[in-house]
Image (cartoon, rainbow, N blue to C red; front, side, top):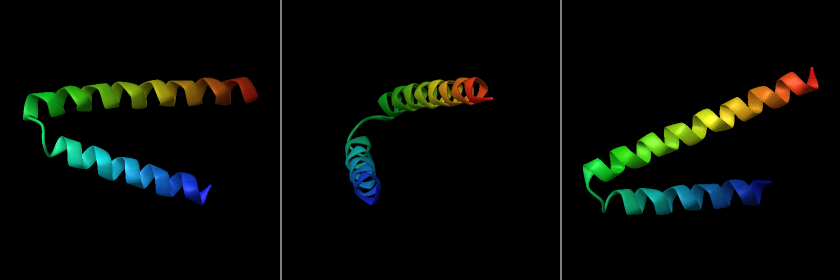
Length: 53
């Protein structure tokens, strides 16, 4: 599990490096997409929790 966390941190650092190279409008689009992904993930988690109960 620890290896997964290390890999996650490396990917985040790679993303930050890329974000520093692109323009603000593109960063805003990526932010919107990331928020959509997070919302879907939370909905999925909520559905799984309801199935367990």
